[in-house]
View 1 (cartoon, rainbow, N blue to C red):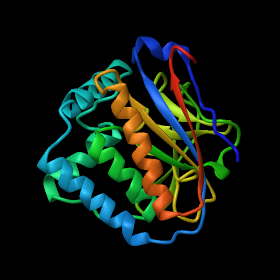
View 2: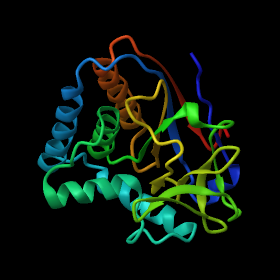
View 3: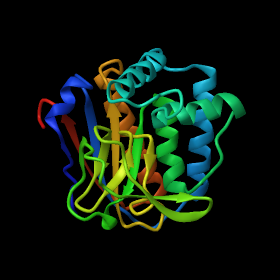
View 4: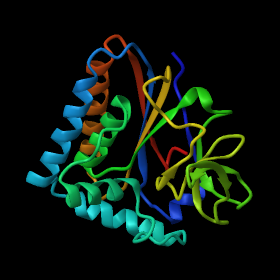
Length: 231
């Protein structure tokens, strides 16, 4: 199977010292139990509300500081994990979107960690985390219609050879590489800062793979821990 190896711009060390990520490549199989994903999502919401992990707020606060460091406004555009968890705090749950998306959202909510899920077949070249020049196109939707926008110069983005795949580090994913259950080549990136124990990052990756294996028996996966020190 194809293993995705993302790259990280070493200049990001000044913005997010100690950043590390778990990259998980998945060769999909037929979905056998879609209801499992809905239940996993609800279980994660319940667990968060009942007994949150002790380092959750510190981790989210650390992400807010990282966003401020590259000029973003985290109260307006928070990291993806904080945005999801705010919705759970408000509504007590999170609506189902798609079995695969529900599973990685469940991991994000339970472990207070930004988790990206991408259709790797839509990529041109390998994913890389870097600073935007400001001219890179980003596919999005506005008023229900396809649209293009551009990141701010100096904004941290995920991108491939032809454009932005996620703006403001992990705030908003693009349309072009958006993941759903129809994808055959899936790539997940779990992004953490030192406020989250490394053991918890590994546990989150284990749980993501476990749930995906239950959802898609026969699927194959590979994982790789990536840090700025290795980039």
